Structures are given as C-alpha cells and as structure tokens.
Figure 1 (tube, rainbow, N blue to C red):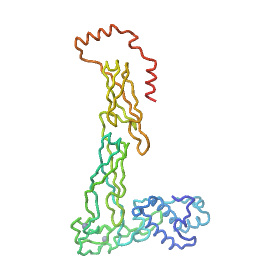
Figure 2: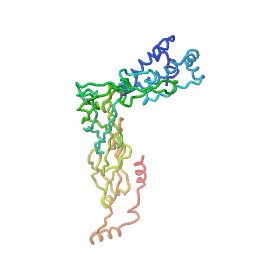
Figure 3: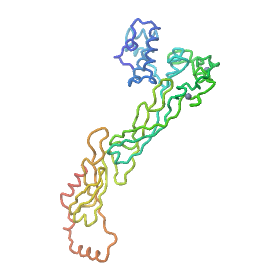
Figure 4: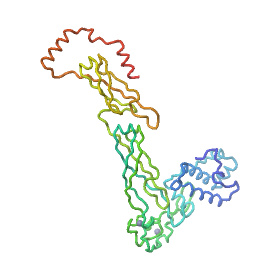
Length: 371
Ligand SMILES: [Zn+2]
Ligand SMILES: [Zn+2]
C-alpha cells in the first residue's frame, strides 16, 4: 500500500496534468513490467500494489480531484480505501480493464511455473556437520519439439470459432473499479484463441514434458527436522515466458538412538556400574563428534549431569554450538553369585552413615549442571 511518502504521479511516472489516456498507458506499461508472474525483482509485488493504488486513484476524476487538492489526507478524509488487489485474479482484472490481455497476443498469458516439493532424510550427526544431498525430482520443462506451443511442427492451427480467435468471451460485470465489460477465457479453446488440429506428439499438446532432474542440495549445519530449503527457479517451467517455480526440499532429521535433541542441546546417558560409580572410572561416551573418554570421580551419583560445553548442535546460520548434557545412570547388579553376595554382605557390615554421606559440594555441582 502506498504511504504518504509516495506521490501517485511519481509512482506512475506521469506529470500532474497527464490525460486519462496517458495515465492508463503508464499504468499498463508498469503493470506489465511489475506483474509478479513475470518480474524477477524481489519487491515487484509491493511496487505492483502501489502502482495499482495510484492508478485506481488517478483514473477516477473524483478521487483524482481530492488527491490533487488535499493529497493523501484528502483521500482518507473522503473515505477512500484502496481496493485489495488479489494477485491470483490479476489476469482477469487486466482483461477487464484494458479489454485485451496485458501481455499481448491472443489471450496468451504468462504464468509462473508451479513449485515442486521434494524430501531428504539425514542422520542427526549429518545435521550437526551439514551435508550435501542429491535430490531427484520430476519437473515440467518446456517441450523441445514444439517449444511450448503444443502444436505438432508443420501442422496448421485453426482459429477458434467460438471466440473468433480472441480467446475471450464477454460478460458484463461489476467490480470495485466500477461496472465494465468483463472478458473471461473462451471455454472451447481455453483462452488460446486457437484450435490445434494436430497436438504435438512429444508432449501430447501440453507444451511441457516431465524431466527427471537431480539437484545437489546443501544442507546447512544445525538444521532442524521439518525445515524446508528453497531453491529458487528450479521448479516447473512457467507458461509462455513466465518464470519457473521453486523447489522446496523438506529435510527430515532421523532420530538417533544415542541422543535426544532439544533445540541446540543434546542429551545422552553414561552408564556406570555400581562399583565404577563408587570407585571412580573412565567411561567412553558418544558425542556428535565421535566417542570421548569421560572421567568420573569416586562417589559419582545416579542422576548427576555432566555438561560438555559446545558439544551440542551448531546454531543454524549463526555462531557456536549448544551443549551436550550427559546424564549418569548407575547399574545395580541383578544376578549375584554366592561369592559376590558374601562380599557385599561384608561390605555392608563395614558401612556406616558416613559411607553414604553427601559432600556439601554435590548439590552445588548438580545445580551448576542446569545453569
Ligand atoms: Zn510438444
Ligand atoms: Zn475460443
């Protein structure tokens, strides 16, 4: 929507005393340039809406007078609200406006190609490092035999009798721009104005064929399950000069039995035996970068958490990595031999409250793990 910063005459590139015909001509030229199906510019859609609004105001003598005298404030005061431009119905809007097609020719209309959805699966470890994947997909491309016309080369094309070749049939219609003769696509020829007697054999008249393509997709480190990567312009071919659609690659990050991911942090467990926990031990722990040796002191308790700073997932499109939190589990023996039972009985006789007394520092350590 145009703001007070935009002058409607400047938007259309016409002088303040421009005639209605000049204004219409300027809008037509800009609309053709900025049409979102055609323009490659990132802000084309926004500019298109601005230009449409300018045209809407200046093409009506009442709103143009208001604007000339009092500017944008005058329009607001007069209750003017720009029409919401539904980009999906632009083609119809233009044919209604100009009585012919915006893009010239017999109702031939450029259309942006459709998007393609593809999917890849990667391991969590790959998601941590980033990966390149070859993604196969089927895409509609312009038929090379008929160059998109759908007509078998060397065969005649007849003019459609229903619409006389215009591709359009007329009906009276009302819109926010006022009442006008609205044209819609001819039902017999589908708006092409032509009747193809011999459809192209290669594409069966569609003008496009399916092609199996392979794309190398760079998956950035730190990607999350369910995120999509957009590859601009790699999708289905557009019709009649419209730009190609995009490819959206859905990335599935497979679960890893060793880790639980939470945001950029990962959780895992380290299992110590009862005696390892009591006596202290060095235990191999899996990380995203491979196994590491972790040293646990005597009296290690179940439920302790060891924080491995910077061993988590990388921050997507950022810096640094999350942490890995290793939860300590302690295995209590389930099947004792007579000898083991005797030894543990003896151990118990030598134990006192002192044996199991917590260090004061233990809770501090536990607290710091969650910080
Ligand atoms: Zn063909
Ligand atoms: Zn027709």
